[in-house]
Amino acid sequence: MAGLSDKRLLFLTGKGGVGKSTVAIALGIAAARRGLRCCVAELTGQDRAAVAFGHRDGSSGARELRLAQDLWTISIEPQHALEEYLSQKAGPFGDVLAGSRTFHGFVQATPGMRELLTLGKAWELAQPQRRTAGARPYDLVIVDAPATGHGLAALSTPRTFAEIAKVGPIASQGRTLDAFFTDPDAAAVVAVALAEEMPVNETLRLRRELREQLGIELAATVVNALLPDRLGPRQGATVAQAEQAAAKASPLVTAALRAARSEHVRAAAQRAQVARLAEGLGSAPLELPYLFTPAVDVAGLELLSERLEELL
Image (cartoon, rainbow, N blue to C red; front, side, top):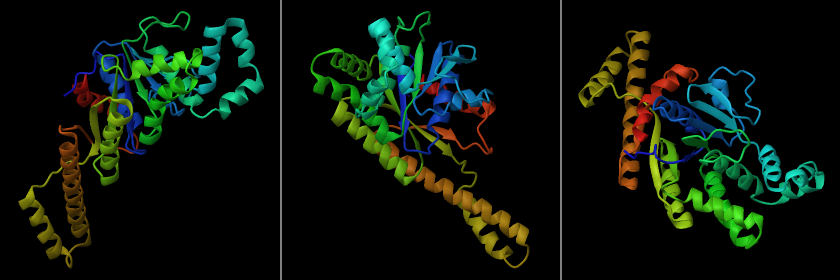
């Protein structure tokens, strides 16, 4: 399994609904347990890490919020990233621009500008020498990125701006970010999927498009929420026979047998999709168990983090 602890930044993406944010937070817990000063940076604006650790207001307020020893989080908002960038680049004049409604209208109307700003802040978090006054560097930044299509588009944005602008601060910033996010010694892309046909297809397409569009490889793949397969082939057949025999006897027994057989069938289907994904990738993905809880709490995150530590 890939050792990713030597990177400065991990970019996690995957089809919507696969548990990407959960994996990002759990991976952050694993990194902190390793003694790495780690920040989970959310680009989705939902502050899930803060909520999971009991910050019920659900907002880090665009600031770096301490969750536990060596573990921090931030929700990167384009507006705050813009204000910070202007202040760093232009000083008092930047503050004037930050307060200009006309300038903000221009930023909002420029395709890709929001992505460039949020990636710029993620890049700043991952630098050994931070540009934010008084901020300490992190050993690892884990970016909870948008879903696959938007995530890939975001990663492509710096190169697009550099090619269009040619010269000037935007072009320079674009080249800097593109060089960082495509440097295998500095950053890596991790895909999160479910063991279902569509997420598997999307993960394989992501791998291909990363190569074609950015010239980089998918560093690792995580398959989330795998059901345990408690029955072997013989036990599965026995349960199916018992279900038929009990159909006219006891509704309760029949329901229990039907549930057991249904889970066995679903688990077998998941294993088939994992095998298909492994064949397409040329390597086995990291597997995470399904957590039989209404919501993933810190205890559940700790459990997943133990498995995710293999990535580091």
